[in-house]
Length: 477
Image (tube, rainbow, N blue to C red):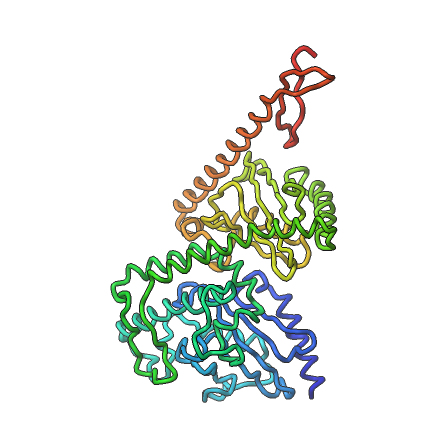
């Protein structure tokens, strides 16, 4: 049975990793090859719900009788076993779901060997609903809009506080664990388990991706008259002592904490090249590998794009790359010159690169902080990261995918009415034109420099021709 379980599980994990949903970053799975029957899953809260863009972790243990018996699933995002995140997501970590055997249901809702891990994860994802109040048995048809709104409101607050802000604060040592709660408490650590969080790098990258959405959510909370600072959350009829979402409204505090984290993560990003430079000076293996990868990528990309993409080290530092993208003719990027910095961690590939545009761009894939969202097909190959960056930029009509958009205003226009779509194109074109103006300014400065040729100092000119700097004719030559 154990062999059958392992074979079935390996097949399912392979299918999951190769599915189309790899490009939809809603669910992530981590496990050790030495024990594939103990899995960690991360589910990102669906947009347009009170769980939007929150990070919910689950521990999944696969019994040796699998698939005859269902997986055993425990919610780890519980605020040290003190917070109930929904009618089916208990403070104890219990996930109440009929296919898991943790809730009674109709015969067609019970576990069956034909079901699998992906079905379990999708079912759990469905619990992060737009109206979780109505998931409580007996309240399915309750239309008390007041209670529904209040329940959503407090989940909205704690979603930001406990699943986004607190785990990152713990990782950076900004906020200590509550008194009396030790890391040995295992499954109920929730936000406090940041030091052993297998998804910590994912948290950080997505924090940068979704930062504008988090800021908008906090502003929405500040403007909500039903969330006055210092007032306690309202308890729902189905909540009881020991299994409740208790707390107080304080969006002002969340705003301050979010700003601190933004500065901290950006500082860490900018520190990567500094730390990496030290490694490079000692001929570190990773530094040498990155240099070799850049040379190989540049060779292939020059041929493939006919010189429309350039790639170089910034200050000869293998941990900081600059990608220069010259807009293709007859596209919205025509004539533009985008400069993009790729920050590479000294812990690469355990920590994935962070990509920031030097030239602002009005684009659904580029945040207001100039952070680009993209997904590489393989995290350990820099060539795949470069491909992912180019694919993210060049997608003319990106499909509607709220988890892959990081500029809420641009997204609303891009997928709005025809007039809104035209407005999006105009804004994108204007931002592209601005990149060309900056490039021309730089070219002009180069072109007016005095140069020495053949031992004689003369006024020379450098111009961009086919995207390559060339010397113009020197007067008097």
